[in-house]
Each structure stands twice: as C-alpha cells, then as structure tokens.
Image (cartoon, rainbow, N blue to C red):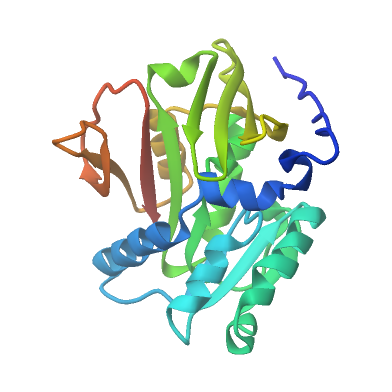
Length: 277
C-alpha cells in the first residue's frame, strides 16, 4: 500500500508562520550536527585507530552536517548529495555561504541520485534522519547499501540511524516545545502489512499560526534485524548497533550511545548503526 501525501496549505499572510523558514525550523528541531559529528568522529577512531578525513553525506538536505564536518579540521573534506535542487540551493545560500572561504573549498555539493553517485571514495558515509527508508523494498535498500559500500575507502564505515518501539507502529502525534515554535512529529498512517508509513512535520508558532505539513515522508519502517541482515548481505564485515543510555534521574535518554548486543523494549527508541567495509 502506498500512501498519498497531502500538499501543504500556505499559512495566512502576516503571521509568524508565513515568515518562517521551514528549513531553518527543521534544523533547529530535528538536527544536532555537533553531537552527531562528535559521535561519528569518535566511533571511527575507535573502529579504525585513526581519524577520518573524507565524509560523504547522502540525502544531505541543507548540508548542515557536512558544514560542521569541514569546520572541525583543516584537512576535512565533505561531499553532500541530494536529489532536490531547491533544498541544495538553500544549503548553498544559507549554510555553505556562512563558512570561511577555506572551508567552502572543501565541500562539494552534488544534485544527483545517491544510487548513481560514483565519484571518489569516502572514509565515512552518512545516511541519517532515517532517509534511506524511502527505499520501500529490501531489494532497493539492499542495492543502496551495496553501492554505499562501493563508495567507501578500504577501511571506510557507513553510519545510519534507525528508530522503533511499539509507538512507532501506530498513528501518533508528538510535540516538542521550543523557544520560537512547537515542533510536531505526526505519524499519520501506518500499514502493518507493508510497513509503509506516512509522516509529517508541522510547526506551530506563538501567534497560533501553523506551518502544516512543512515536510512529508512516505517510507517503510524497517526493523533492526532487517537492517542488520541487509548490511551483512551487502558485504559489510561488521555491523554494530549503538544504544542510548538512560539518565538515572529523569529516566530519559542521556545522549550517550554505546555498542549493544541487546536492546530494551522501550515504547520509542533511536539507535546508530555502523557498518564497516
């Protein structure tokens, strides 16, 4: 079953929503490139005993993570790939343009399908924010994993994130209040026969105006066993799942991810996965 996404409805003129930049709102509410690069940088050093230099960010969107990568070290280089020309142009104007000239020289942006990219080898490839789930069959996703492996240097590592728990398999709307707006993650539809989901991101502002369906996702929710099996089948030598620890005072996640052989039956969880070539 394939769900149809509903097009966004423009907010009324003169409202905070009408003046908001949906890409910046997404970065504020969804991304944490500093913490993400911290984890990837450290994990690669642990796995390979050296520092990564070349990072490829698949499904890069605003290239926020790539920009953080080239800021880290003067020899770091990033390759940012996305098929959407609008978001890539936003990335150039808003994120890449804010880099120093020496940093801009070390980031390459490509408008192409990640399946077709065949330029150079990377120490690290990222497919974050569950973006790979747009491949709705095991055959398609397995092909992507195989091609990502081909794009890695001999000691390269692919990093992805994944989510699950029983709350992920049902209609659900979760809100997070931030300083400038409230962020909504809306799981609008789920088909247990196919694993297909329809999800939206909405933003609600202080004047009660909305950016409804600012982002839409129609994808398949893969399980951890499926992902581990497909990565093995793609030829990766070792696949590791990193589970988040728990803050003893709050009972919530503490932001520290460590290798795990077993998970917890939490209602909702997010993990990182490394796949070594």
